[in-house]
Amino acid sequence: MKHSKYFNMAKGYSHFILFFLLINASFQIRASEDIIVEKPEIVISGIEAELRIIFNNDSLLAEFQHNPIVYVNNKHQEFTVSDNIVSLNFTFSENRDYSISVIGQKYLINVNPIPLWLSILPPLIAILIALTFREVFTALLIGILFGAAAIFYYQGSSFFISIFQGMFAVVDTYILYALNNTAHLSIIIFSMLIGAMVNLISTNGGMQGVVRFLSKYAKTPRSGQFITWLLGIAIFFDDYANTLVVGNTMRPVCDRLKISREKLSYIVDSTAAPVAAIAFVTTWIGAEISYIEDGLRTIGLDESPYHVFINSLAYSFYPVLALLFIVLLIWQKRDFGPMYKAEVKARNSTSNNNEDQNKITAKNS
Image (tube, rainbow, N blue to C red; front, side, top):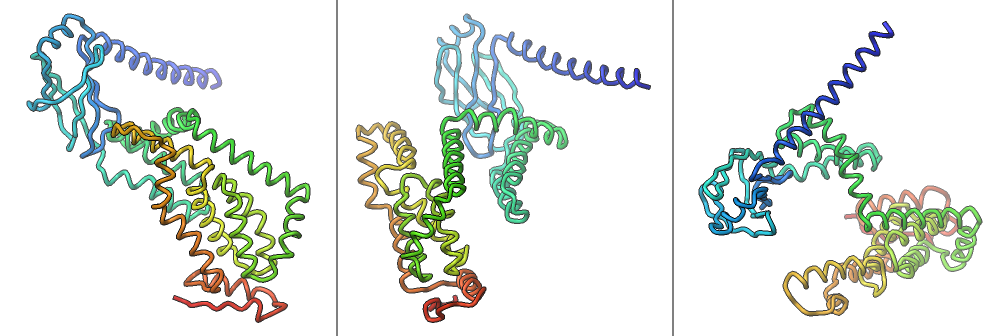
């Protein structure tokens, strides 16, 4: 029985190796063709995708250069040429065979484009799972898995095979690609360092010292919320650092003043991103300037990206209004809807030392 078990394992491994040898052989045969038509790996219905024609034969390339015409489904197409590669953009709208004609030769490729509406499902699934099970990482992985499986399914794989291919692609393609991105790694490392610093300060008692210091000024729910807003404005250099530092620092203060966690989260969230978006020196500015620079290069405008950013601040209505709106709510002691209920519940959770001090003038919508 033991030998039979090993024999079956060896047999399975041999089939596995044979499978990859066949795949490798198919790629080698494909690479030996004189003209290769490469369709894009991901094709979305109604969205332009790049189609490439690769010439592996110099004489055929010279013939094409004398007669540079490409037809797709008997319609002339505009294209660009780089070395031995002809690139053109084409919109695939339905599942069918598409004919590509070049120098009198016709090639057929089957394309099954992914419906455009399907692109909303991966993030929607991730959001629903995160809200249902209160677990973000698993929700994100399942959302990515669904998207990857959909890609392989529309590339021609069966339903179950596409699921396994999607599982492998999540690890060896998408996660590795994300970790190979400098911007992604910088955010991950920065967040880990900020989190470690906050934990170190809390362990050494530094956070408690900050709480005692702020307690001198935060004596009522209104003043506690205002101090939270001020800290959110002060830590402007990064929204992640703002959320981690202000949230952890003000949580015990807000708990003592019977300010709801929902209200604390709202104040922290509505100051972190807005202040990082309009401050002159933040981690957001680097990303924004790079986007502005790409846009200026695209339209051919000779202008300083930072100068354009400074001028755009006059139109940053959301960040400015969000910061002012918080102050207005704190000053007037007004809360609405679910936030009103959360605040009432927090105030009534324990006996108050001063009922007039903790009273909310609220308007329930």
